[in-house]
Image 1 (tube, helix red, strand yellow):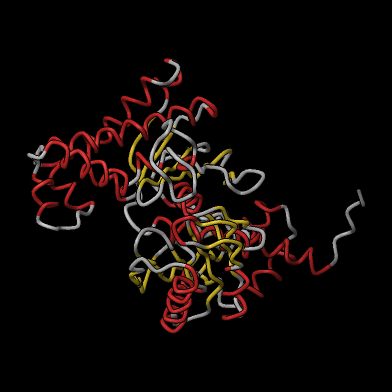
Image 2 (cartoon, one colour):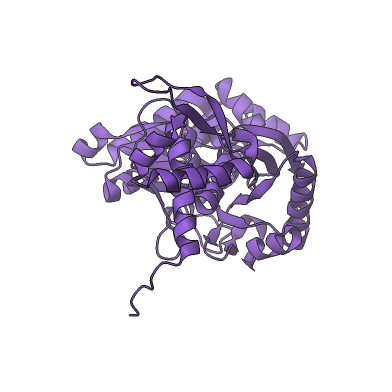
Length: 402
């Protein structure tokens, strides 16, 4: 293995700029002297870096701090709107995008319906979304962060396989970078959501280890270990939706049978409710089906809230299946916080109770007593924020914090 080469002047400067930026981001407003103390850089180096950041519009003065006997120091902070990130969420039945500033504030949200389109047609929608957001930006755009279902090679921005979008070996990062001239970072949507919940969710101390599960059109997990996103050796960590769950179960879009996704996802719950309604013949869902209505998740949710037996069975079975998957995860990793998001969470407290009860029933008693299973604290733009945080970390060395 070759020895590391000596750092060049340019690399040293880039390191110092990132160090100062991160210190400003985490501790600002802060004085130049305090930046030097936090970073162990010389005051001359700090002044030189700050001067360059002023020229780039990244930093501003915000008054003076308390004096310790001499002249009161000038305080500095990062300008939140100095750069924007285009954040994309390519999940469910809609592709969503927005502009995100350096503090995670979202503007110009755009939703484009997918309408079942995938493959090349799906890529056209992504490009349209990016073009519209670039046109909406009123300042410099730092780059593009993308959260998408599937197994993603984040080093190259290549979608190795996205089952629900029929994308395989799609170099999305390269295609978007060539189109826009901007850096592009692509990550699995569940992994991006986990990063967002860790970086921006809540107001108390962050849990350094946590799992964030998406239960919607698909089922997947994002894993944070030691405050960092864990992606696995092949970037597929958290693909719990395609773990075999039911012997001789229903066909999954991945080509296998009986995956967790075939019993715990939104589509699986709808299909199960319809099947039970047809068997029983007395359900509101059965009457709707006989009338030719194509049932959707909202119909099953409404029936569940009214106590419809077919909907109730399907929803609670789906919740218990997800709980079993969570028990396996927590048994392997002993993580004390699990947060869930996605369209299936709209079934509310009874569904969540079924998830918790099954996770507890299938776990070692000590571990079950210590794990907290809740809904995510962020209520919107989860994947958009996470994809943006990934890009900010990579391009500026920032670790977005609340």
